[in-house]
Amino acid sequence: MPSFRTGDVVRVLEERPGLQRVEVDLGCGPERAYVLPQLTGTVALGDRVVVNTTAVELGLGTGGWHVVHWNLAHESFHEPGPGHILKGRYTSLQTDVGSTEEHLAALSEVESIDGMPVVAAALHSQVPAVAVAFKDARPDARLAYVMTDGAGLPLAMSDLVHALRTRGLLDATITCGHAFGGDFEAVSIYSALAVARHVAHADAAVVAMGPGIVGTNTRLGFSGMEVGPILDAAAALGGAPIACLRVSFADTRARHAGLSHHTRTALRLACRERVEVAVPRLGGQQDSRLQTELAGAGIDRRHALVEVDPPDVLALFDRAGLDVVSMDRPARDDPALFLAGAAAGALAAARVGSAPTDGDDG
Image (cartoon, rainbow, N blue to C red; front, side, top):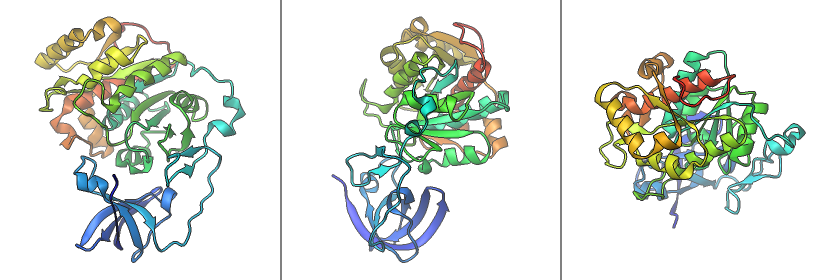
């Protein structure tokens, strides 16, 4: 059950479109909280607010911050949306964000994305690796990010996406399902890809959930299973689906060491179409282990493995001024994870304007 407490805003830490970060005094001194003005309106110094404290009390990985649920300084809050499509439906914070589809007759009969490369990644933290590698290879091409509702719902919470947009490494954002706050809103992954191609005029798309992936240490109970249906959707729409591997040689958890069970399961069970899998050349024993584990999971038989020499992703992060962390590990401490993302981005750049070819080197 959720937990709520009431306190006073004692400091405004940061403000940007769609997000405020503040400190609230709940009776024991300042504590951090964030505000989603699209849902509650903005807050100001001295406002008395109700905050949801559940994540902090549970000590979740994305915790450390309370969420402002309501500003008691407001007698009411009304901000009409652009349409009749609600997200967060049947909750007290359901909001009429509308959808791109309901306003554009040009999308009414669309069933194709015209061969657009679509990278599906399980981790939000791999999005910048895909983006920097893609833009390094094709700085002239447009890249869209589709954020699903597999984890956090507000796109404004992503510091990574904010940084990528301000640095010109993403050209458009689309939020689908119950995720919200993108440049474009979409109802489903299918229509989100159509919006990316035909409205945002993207040459390629990277699809991943927002911050806060969920896992349960069971074979099927993790939100990264969505990678399979995303790849299938890209294939169904005539795109060029590219799977981004989750691979780590720094993760101490057995289920994620080497080739993560998230990748093994999603590509083996959840993805029914044959797709390209970007396999980074890592060198030495890491290469041998990765190839052995891909074969052991049967991924080499179900899908087309494409070996890619990824660019120096850490150098690209440095050049862009990006501070990328995954599972509390800086990118330099877990380079294989980000080289896998860079391999997928480089392969997507190579596939722009051409149909996918089984087994080609990227």
